[in-house]
Image (cartoon, rainbow, N blue to C red; front, top):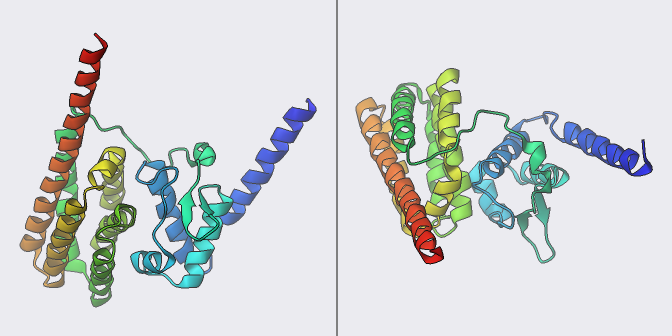
Amino acid sequence: MSKISARSAGTAKVRLQAIAGVLQPVSTGVAQSMVNRILDLVRTGMLRSGDRLPSERDLIEIFGISRPSLREAIRALSTLGVVETRHGGGAYVTDLEARTLLAPLDFFLSLSQSNLADVFESRRIVEIEIVRKAALNATTEDVAILNGMLVAHEKVLTDPVGFRILDARFHAQLSQIAGNSVLERIAYGLYNMGLDIRRRATEDVALIHRSLGEHTAIVRAIEAGDGPAAVHAIAFHLDHIEASTRAVMEEDVAAFSRRARAEK
């Protein structure tokens, strides 16, 4: 083996050892949960190179964790090469050279115009059942967590990155409350489809405001234990998500057509 190859192999081994150490469960599991969520958002394109994460205070509210747990998670993400803290403050997504280390840990399918309707039909089937079960199963503590997310949402109304992180956590929390691990896994995969497209839709501050109202309606129905109202609220929410996703895809098609005509 050449000196260069040996050095590369040694570097890779050190990196893998560091990653293995970082990914060991922490005592509370809270920091690890945040690490996993951020990795998911990077892997699916919801967070990209150069994105600035919300402030420490906002992240504490979004994830509902303590400051020590947050800092532990940020250190882990920094070790992974996914997040860096820059001079002057603020944590940013790096250039993602470590992206290959985030190889699919779950199924992730591409979203296209041809399967858009099928994807959202599947999301409705799954998430409607999840929300119906959540309305039946939610404890006082569950409702408190959801209400805390609504409070956090109000503070990221002009922060698309903060909203995307919180939105992913909100939908994951609904699945957790429903208490069906199979539905939770399917919902997770369906949510991840087309995140790169929906990322652009969520740059619209009006959409973030609208989502707060729709999330609030879902939480109020769950809080009241009203299954039919919860089903109506999530169906309404998914209709809007599909419409905004479709609009972005149509813009892409139109832009491609314009470029094609210009090149003729």
